[in-house]
Image (tube, rainbow, N blue to C red):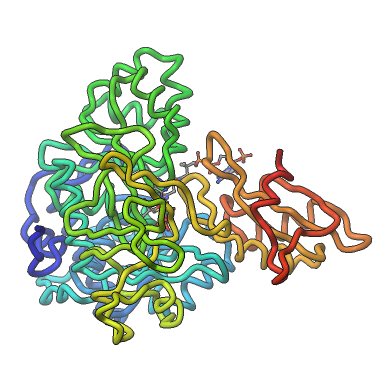
Amino acid sequence: MTREPQVSEIVQSISTLALASPALRSLGVVWTWDGLDRLMRRHAARLARLGVQAGDRVVVCAESSAAHVAVVLAHLRLGVVHVPANTRYGADELAHVIGDSGARLVLRDEDLHALEDPAHESIATWPEPPSRDALAMLIYTSGTTGRPKGVMLSHRALGANLGAMMRLWEIGPRDRVIAALPLFHVHGLGLALLGPLVAGAEVELIPRFTVDAVVSALDQGATVFMGVPTMYHLLLERLETDASACASLAGARLFTAGSAALSQRDFERFERATGHRILERYGMTETLFTLSNPYRGERRPGAVGQPVPGVTLRLVDEYGADAGTGPGEIEVQSDGLMDGYWGRADATREAFRAAPDDASTKEGDLRGAWFRTGDTAVIDAGSWRILGRTSTDIIKSGGYKIGAGEIEDVLMASGRFAECAVLGVPDAKWGEVVGAVVVLREGQAAVDAELVAHLERHLVDAKRPRRWAFVEALPRNAMGKVKKAELRACFG
Ligand code: MCA
Ligand code: AMP
């Protein structure tokens, strides 16, 4: 049983932690809670001057920095809804997030750095903290079709789930946790930054992941590293030729992986190089973190462990009937669950299966309903194993979730193709890369500079096709649906 946090643990802790103790390291500078609190108060004063109130959405599209962290904390403290955006978005993708969220304000790097100016006005007292049911964040995530949707995360969900994760992994004041993941997804923002800060750990911010920066932070006393499998793959390229880097990593306390499947091979290579068995866990923006290998106990390669405290999981077959130990689709009930997709009651309803004894599940009241993850798993000797996605339309590349539909729309809008299909192509470094199978319209050129420019304008780096296959026609079933599984063969 987990305890219900009274008010969001995050907000509560921030208001009592304004101490002289170190909270954050960033680019060689150590920030105490006092120092962060000063930046937070300056940001609160700016929001008040601009008339931004609790419940308003503020988009932050900026690199990781101490000022960025202070802005996140101020938003949580004030009840302003934090909406982080991918820093590499093009104008189009950013405009979608701003427009869809109805943002009152958009903050870029220069706005954040202005907070470091001591001449900036500041607030003297904080207002009442928001209620635990208040919306804390909107995090944009891709689905099978259309543009990314805003996942509504409440203070209650974040406080309960991040608190449970920190207790499970025994993260606390003795730790210095590396946050090298981007701050626009829940892995970096929630698990690597907010959870550890609230648990009293120090966080070392690495604005852009590089192997050098991570090795050096671990060499200088960082104790915990959280990464996506691609980061481990990149670290391993160094570790296997650099004994001193291995020694720097060997001294750490904990390495965790998630956001995509960690290969058994990389798990074993990492153990050989550093003596550490990477602790793999599983989660989703909509549910936060739901399965984890144990901190004390056997960490199994290729498995994601057991349900996190506060989370109930089940496996179901294609009709929604209990599938026992599987294989089946994972469905989730959890105190870390989202409140739905922002402005998308239709998509929210589709994402949940009402519990049999709660057929009257109302919009906005999702208690008792099961969230359908779209991930297939099996329970093997007490440990859950993710087998893959139920849909070929979701791709995971470098830990980023990518919807095939959004890319197909951009490809068709180029006017080059009669038809196209996008799917994930397995890749040792990225997990998957985006593959496009296309039928050229008559007289159209294949991939040239103009098409590349079109893709760069509309799609962030990770979403751009890396592999192309040109075919005469796409294979379709009797219903006219493209048989994507068959297209895998196009890429050998
Ligand atoms: C970049 N490149 C790629 C991709 N991305 N190629 C193929 N596929 C890709 N996805 C190319 C670039 O074009 C460039 O090529 C070269 O690789 C280096 O690019 P760069 O951006 O510098 O790469 P990097 O900085 O090394 O990025 C790798 C990374 C990054 C640090 C692993 O992908 C990353 O931060 N991933 C984390 C995503 C994340 O936070 N996911 C959490 C979602 P060229 O050299 O030719 O220009 S939350 C979630 O999933 C749930 C809740 C959970 O459970 O956690
Ligand atoms: P996101 O929407 O970015 O939150 O990504 C959520 C998805 O990431 C899940 O639905 C899974 O498909 C995938 N994922 C997260 N952790 C793991 C893991 N440990 N193994 C396999 N897939 C994972």
